[in-house]
Amino acid sequence: MTSELSPIEKAKFIAAKQATEYVKSGMKVGLGTGSTASWLVRCLGEMVRDEGLQIKAVPTSSRTAQLAREVGIDVITLDEARWLDVTIDGTDEFDADLCLIKGGGGAHLQEKIVATASDQMIVIADASKKVDTLGSFPLPLEVIPFGAKTTQALIEETLIGMDVLGRDVTQRMAGDMPFISDEGNFIFDLHLRRIGNPRQLSLILNQIPGVVENGLFIDICDVVILGYGDGRVEVTDLTNDSHQELRFDVRDDDNIFFDIAD
Ligand code: 5RP
Image (tube, rainbow, N blue to C red; front, side):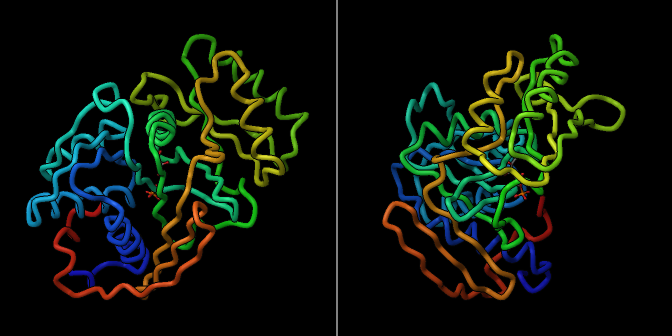
Protein backbone atom coordinates (compact mmCIF):
# COMPACT_ATOMS: atom_id res chain seq x y z
CA MET A 1 0.00 0.00 0.00
CA THR A 2 1.20 3.55 -0.68
CA SER A 3 1.02 4.35 3.04
CA GLU A 4 3.94 1.96 3.47
CA LEU A 5 6.11 3.79 0.95
CA SER A 6 8.68 6.35 2.03
CA PRO A 7 7.80 9.94 1.00
CA ILE A 8 10.44 9.82 -1.74
CA GLU A 9 9.12 6.58 -3.23
CA LYS A 10 5.60 7.99 -3.02
CA ALA A 11 6.78 11.09 -4.90
CA LYS A 12 8.35 8.93 -7.62
CA PHE A 13 5.23 6.78 -7.87
CA ILE A 14 2.96 9.83 -8.13
CA ALA A 15 5.09 11.38 -10.88
CA ALA A 16 5.09 8.07 -12.77
CA LYS A 17 1.35 7.60 -12.39
CA GLN A 18 0.68 11.14 -13.63
CA ALA A 19 2.91 10.49 -16.66
CA THR A 20 0.72 7.57 -17.74
CA GLU A 21 -1.86 10.22 -18.79
CA TYR A 22 0.39 10.87 -21.79
CA VAL A 23 0.32 7.25 -22.96
CA LYS A 24 -2.51 6.13 -25.24
CA SER A 25 -3.29 2.86 -26.99
CA GLY A 26 -1.44 2.46 -30.27
CA MET A 27 1.57 4.46 -29.13
CA LYS A 28 5.21 3.47 -29.31
CA VAL A 29 6.75 4.40 -25.98
CA GLY A 30 10.36 4.73 -24.80
CA LEU A 31 10.83 3.39 -21.27
CA GLY A 32 13.55 4.95 -19.12
CA THR A 33 15.82 3.35 -16.57
CA GLY A 34 16.08 3.74 -12.79
CA SER A 35 13.86 3.59 -9.74
CA THR A 36 11.42 6.29 -10.92
CA ALA A 37 11.14 4.83 -14.41
CA SER A 38 10.53 1.40 -12.94
CA TRP A 39 7.38 2.77 -11.23
CA LEU A 40 6.22 3.91 -14.65
CA VAL A 41 6.86 0.49 -16.16
CA ARG A 42 4.82 -1.13 -13.41
CA CYS A 43 1.96 1.36 -13.82
CA LEU A 44 1.90 0.77 -17.58
CA GLY A 45 2.01 -2.99 -17.03
CA GLU A 46 -1.03 -2.66 -14.81
CA MET A 47 -2.83 -0.64 -17.50
CA VAL A 48 -1.97 -3.28 -20.11
CA ARG A 49 -3.33 -6.00 -17.87
CA ASP A 50 -6.40 -4.29 -16.42
CA GLU A 51 -7.42 -1.66 -18.97
CA GLY A 52 -6.41 -3.24 -22.27
CA LEU A 53 -3.81 -0.57 -23.02
CA GLN A 54 -2.01 -1.54 -26.22
CA ILE A 55 1.48 -0.14 -26.60
CA LYS A 56 4.80 -1.18 -28.01
CA ALA A 57 7.74 -0.18 -25.87
CA VAL A 58 11.43 0.41 -26.44
CA PRO A 59 13.38 -0.01 -23.19
CA THR A 60 16.56 1.98 -22.52
CA SER A 61 18.43 -0.79 -20.71
CA SER A 62 18.48 -4.53 -20.24
CA ARG A 63 17.10 -3.98 -16.70
CA THR A 64 14.08 -2.08 -17.99
CA ALA A 65 13.55 -4.59 -20.81
CA GLN A 66 13.39 -7.40 -18.27
CA LEU A 67 10.93 -5.56 -16.02
CA ALA A 68 8.74 -4.52 -18.98
CA ARG A 69 8.47 -8.12 -20.15
CA GLU A 70 7.74 -9.29 -16.60
CA VAL A 71 4.76 -6.91 -16.32
CA GLY A 72 3.39 -7.89 -19.74
CA ILE A 73 4.46 -4.95 -21.92
CA ASP A 74 5.18 -5.70 -25.58
CA VAL A 75 8.88 -4.90 -26.05
CA ILE A 76 10.40 -4.04 -29.45
CA THR A 77 13.78 -2.68 -30.52
CA LEU A 78 14.35 0.92 -31.57
CA ASP A 79 15.20 -0.32 -35.05
CA GLU A 80 11.79 -1.96 -35.24
CA ALA A 81 10.07 1.15 -33.91
CA ARG A 82 12.19 3.69 -35.83
CA TRP A 83 10.42 6.59 -34.14
CA LEU A 84 8.50 6.88 -30.87
CA ASP A 85 5.52 8.92 -29.75
CA VAL A 86 6.88 9.55 -26.29
CA THR A 87 9.73 8.57 -23.98
CA ILE A 88 9.28 8.76 -20.22
CA ASP A 89 12.38 8.59 -18.04
CA GLY A 90 13.82 9.67 -14.71
CA THR A 91 16.68 12.09 -14.21
CA ASP A 92 19.49 12.81 -11.78
CA GLU A 93 19.14 16.60 -12.04
CA PHE A 94 17.15 19.12 -14.06
CA ASP A 95 17.28 22.91 -14.26
CA ALA A 96 14.78 25.63 -15.19
CA ASP A 97 15.49 25.15 -18.93
CA LEU A 98 14.74 21.41 -18.51
CA CYS A 99 18.38 20.56 -19.21
CA LEU A 100 19.23 17.29 -17.49
CA ILE A 101 22.05 15.27 -16.05
CA LYS A 102 21.34 11.60 -16.58
CA GLY A 103 23.31 8.38 -16.35
CA GLY A 104 23.31 7.69 -12.63
CA GLY A 105 22.28 4.19 -13.63
CA GLY A 106 24.86 4.06 -16.42
CA ALA A 107 22.21 3.93 -19.15
CA HIS A 108 22.40 7.47 -20.56
CA LEU A 109 23.67 6.38 -23.99
CA GLN A 110 20.61 4.31 -24.82
CA GLU A 111 18.42 6.80 -22.94
CA LYS A 112 19.65 9.69 -25.08
CA ILE A 113 19.26 7.76 -28.34
CA VAL A 114 15.73 6.70 -27.43
CA ALA A 115 14.64 10.12 -26.12
CA THR A 116 16.02 11.85 -29.21
CA ALA A 117 14.03 9.47 -31.41
CA SER A 118 10.77 10.52 -29.73
CA ASP A 119 8.21 13.22 -30.49
CA GLN A 120 8.26 14.08 -26.81
CA MET A 121 10.45 13.33 -23.79
CA ILE A 122 8.79 13.46 -20.40
CA VAL A 123 10.90 13.38 -17.26
CA ILE A 124 9.45 12.06 -14.03
CA ALA A 125 11.17 12.95 -10.77
CA ASP A 126 10.92 13.70 -7.10
CA ALA A 127 11.67 17.22 -5.91
CA SER A 128 15.28 16.43 -4.95
CA LYS A 129 16.18 16.39 -8.65
CA LYS A 130 15.37 20.08 -9.22
CA VAL A 131 18.46 22.32 -9.17
CA ASP A 132 19.30 25.96 -9.95
CA THR A 133 22.54 24.99 -11.66
CA LEU A 134 23.53 21.55 -12.94
CA GLY A 135 26.64 19.85 -11.63
CA SER A 136 26.24 18.72 -8.04
CA PHE A 137 25.49 15.27 -9.38
CA PRO A 138 28.62 13.88 -11.09
CA LEU A 139 28.29 14.00 -14.87
CA PRO A 140 28.54 10.49 -16.38
CA LEU A 141 30.52 9.89 -19.56
CA GLU A 142 30.38 6.61 -21.45
CA VAL A 143 33.89 5.78 -22.68
CA ILE A 144 35.07 2.86 -24.80
CA PRO A 145 37.50 0.56 -22.95
CA PHE A 146 40.24 0.85 -25.61
CA GLY A 147 42.74 3.46 -24.41
CA ALA A 148 40.46 4.48 -21.54
CA LYS A 149 43.33 5.87 -19.42
CA THR A 150 44.37 8.11 -22.31
CA THR A 151 40.77 9.19 -22.80
CA GLN A 152 40.57 10.01 -19.08
CA ALA A 153 43.69 12.19 -19.37
CA LEU A 154 42.17 14.00 -22.37
CA ILE A 155 38.93 14.58 -20.44
CA GLU A 156 40.89 16.03 -17.49
CA GLU A 157 42.86 18.32 -19.82
CA THR A 158 39.67 19.45 -21.57
CA LEU A 159 38.03 20.36 -18.25
CA ILE A 160 40.80 22.89 -17.48
CA GLY A 161 39.32 25.24 -20.06
CA MET A 162 35.69 24.77 -19.05
CA ASP A 163 33.34 26.77 -16.81
CA VAL A 164 33.16 24.22 -13.99
CA LEU A 165 34.09 24.26 -10.29
CA GLY A 166 35.53 20.76 -9.85
CA ARG A 167 37.62 18.67 -12.22
CA ASP A 168 37.94 15.24 -10.60
CA VAL A 169 37.27 12.33 -12.93
CA THR A 170 36.64 8.87 -11.48
CA GLN A 171 35.94 5.57 -13.12
CA ARG A 172 32.67 4.01 -11.99
CA MET A 173 33.15 0.64 -10.33
CA ALA A 174 30.88 -2.30 -9.61
CA GLY A 175 32.61 -3.70 -6.54
CA ASP A 176 36.23 -4.39 -7.48
CA MET A 177 35.55 -4.40 -11.22
CA PRO A 178 34.86 -1.54 -13.62
CA PHE A 179 31.17 -0.90 -14.20
CA ILE A 180 30.28 -2.04 -17.72
CA SER A 181 27.37 -0.47 -19.59
CA ASP A 182 24.87 -2.41 -21.70
CA GLU A 183 27.01 -1.43 -24.70
CA GLY A 184 30.14 -2.92 -23.11
CA ASN A 185 31.70 0.45 -22.24
CA PHE A 186 33.13 2.11 -19.12
CA ILE A 187 31.51 5.00 -17.29
CA PHE A 188 33.60 7.92 -16.00
CA ASP A 189 31.99 10.31 -13.50
CA LEU A 190 33.01 13.97 -13.71
CA HIS A 191 32.79 15.71 -10.32
CA LEU A 192 32.21 19.24 -11.60
CA ARG A 193 30.11 20.67 -8.72
CA ARG A 194 28.81 23.44 -10.96
CA ILE A 195 28.39 23.47 -14.75
CA GLY A 196 28.37 27.07 -15.98
CA ASN A 197 27.66 26.31 -19.63
CA PRO A 198 26.07 22.85 -20.10
CA ARG A 199 25.51 23.30 -23.84
CA GLN A 200 29.17 24.10 -24.53
CA LEU A 201 30.42 21.38 -22.20
CA SER A 202 28.24 18.74 -23.84
CA LEU A 203 29.48 19.62 -27.34
CA ILE A 204 33.14 19.70 -26.32
CA LEU A 205 33.13 16.47 -24.30
CA ASN A 206 31.61 14.59 -27.24
CA GLN A 207 34.51 15.75 -29.44
CA ILE A 208 37.01 13.69 -27.42
CA PRO A 209 37.87 10.42 -29.21
CA GLY A 210 36.88 7.52 -26.98
CA VAL A 211 33.97 9.40 -25.42
CA VAL A 212 30.80 7.83 -26.72
CA GLU A 213 28.26 10.09 -25.02
CA ASN A 214 27.88 12.38 -22.03
CA GLY A 215 24.92 12.51 -19.64
CA LEU A 216 23.84 16.09 -20.42
CA PHE A 217 20.44 16.21 -22.13
CA ILE A 218 20.10 19.64 -23.73
CA ASP A 219 16.92 20.60 -25.63
CA ILE A 220 15.67 17.01 -25.44
CA CYS A 221 13.24 17.09 -22.51
CA ASP A 222 9.86 18.75 -23.15
CA VAL A 223 7.94 18.07 -19.95
CA VAL A 224 8.92 17.51 -16.31
CA ILE A 225 6.47 15.92 -13.91
CA LEU A 226 7.59 16.47 -10.35
CA GLY A 227 6.03 14.43 -7.58
CA TYR A 228 5.95 15.26 -3.87
CA GLY A 229 5.49 12.88 -0.97
CA ASP A 230 2.27 14.65 0.09
CA GLY A 231 0.50 14.00 -3.23
CA ARG A 232 1.27 17.29 -5.01
CA VAL A 233 2.37 17.14 -8.64
CA GLU A 234 3.92 19.94 -10.68
CA VAL A 235 3.86 19.67 -14.47
CA THR A 236 6.16 21.99 -16.41
CA ASP A 237 5.58 21.81 -20.16
CA LEU A 238 7.98 23.70 -22.42
CA THR A 239 5.94 22.94 -25.54
CA ASN A 240 3.13 25.28 -24.41
CA ASP A 241 5.11 27.19 -21.79
CA SER A 242 2.77 26.06 -19.01
CA HIS A 243 3.21 25.22 -15.36
CA GLN A 244 0.42 23.35 -13.63
CA GLU A 245 0.01 22.24 -10.04
CA LEU A 246 -2.19 19.23 -9.40
CA ARG A 247 -3.02 17.04 -6.49
CA PHE A 248 -2.85 13.33 -6.89
CA ASP A 249 -5.29 11.39 -4.76
CA VAL A 250 -3.41 8.31 -3.69
CA ARG A 251 -5.64 5.57 -2.44
CA ASP A 252 -4.17 2.91 -0.22
CA ASP A 253 -4.97 0.26 -2.81
CA ASP A 254 -3.48 2.29 -5.69
CA ASN A 255 -0.07 0.79 -5.49
CA ILE A 256 0.11 -2.94 -5.51
CA PHE A 257 3.81 -3.18 -6.22
CA PHE A 258 5.31 -1.54 -3.13
CA ASP A 259 7.17 -4.70 -2.23
CA ILE A 260 9.14 -4.72 -5.50
CA ALA A 261 10.28 -1.08 -5.53
CA ASP A 262 13.68 -0.77 -7.23
C1 5RP B 1 19.82 6.03 -15.48
C2 5RP B 1 19.27 7.40 -15.29
C3 5RP B 1 18.15 7.55 -14.32
O1 5RP B 1 17.06 8.08 -14.97
C4 5RP B 1 18.58 8.47 -13.23
O2 5RP B 1 19.75 7.93 -12.65
C5 5RP B 1 17.49 8.64 -12.17
O3 5RP B 1 17.32 7.43 -11.48
P1 5RP B 1 16.31 7.31 -10.28
O4 5RP B 1 14.94 7.45 -10.84
O5 5RP B 1 16.57 5.93 -9.71
O6 5RP B 1 16.65 8.39 -9.28
O7 5RP B 1 19.67 8.35 -15.88
O8 5RP B 1 20.92 6.06 -16.32
